[in-house]
Length: 427
Image (tube, rainbow, N blue to C red; front, side):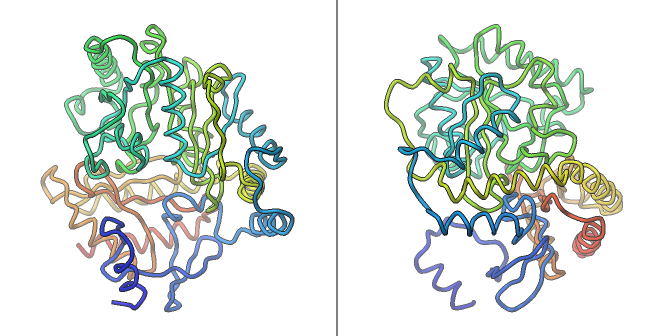
């Protein structure tokens, strides 16, 4: 055990998890690679939990941060902030929400917390619909709408949460149905749940692709079908785009667009990748919803001039270099390769995802039983081979999460797939 690991254990909470039997200290990065304190280089296929979205040490972002820090680092939202207004204008336009207003936070947790505050205030209700297997952050309110027991340390809650089927396509009581039948059954389940509520329900919150849940997703169009039911009851739709936003899925800029047949969501939350490592989160909502608060509210650190400068530079780079298109092209090749590998490895139950967002679910061979020990072993073997990936998934952490920066090259995708194949075959 290293000295830094000993010091970490002495002052950090026991529940603050570290990857690997011998945790690594990452000291620097460039492009899609990072280096640890021993000088070992790794291809990064997790991006600090889908947060280094474009590239490590991206010159355009580091330059913007440095120049803004040289002028002024902090003012708060009590003063006009040009970078914040400029980024808000761009996000509002990109969101697809009419008459959009934007509020910046420092994390996805805080963004979802704010969305819940807006929805419950607007609807005068503390009842929230959430998806089974979901994850929305670690605050008291966000934990209370998390449908994944591994990330929900308390049953106490300021909200009454009702969980709906549909976030997981290949497991559960509807798994054997066709896509159309699956959607029909999930809509019937939603109607049934609403029949058990008392009074008004505030909102449905859903990740288009569940992140911590193991990159699971419903058939395209599920939330559009839900929207027809929600609209009849006046219930708001909150899309949690913390992991799916900014073109990561390749096919769409936002995850909700795969379910947009009945219009955009009422509220959209984002974070992670937009700052490329800087602490940015935010909420986009229709003006009447965003403006429903009748008490004072500010953000000390949300909308910081430095983080906003980073967000603007990062977003400009992403759009100018068509990283959504790169995610679709290179991600498609990577998924095809991973599926070919998975078809020959008995422990692989399913390879799923879209764009540069792939999940590899591991089970005990010949069964549907999750195998978290295998996932941990592959994570270690991949690290030994020079590749960093993540874990997640359901009741047991048995899904390998693959989410490289969106500037990934074909050669790097092949390199990562080779290392991952060796790690999977080592089981």
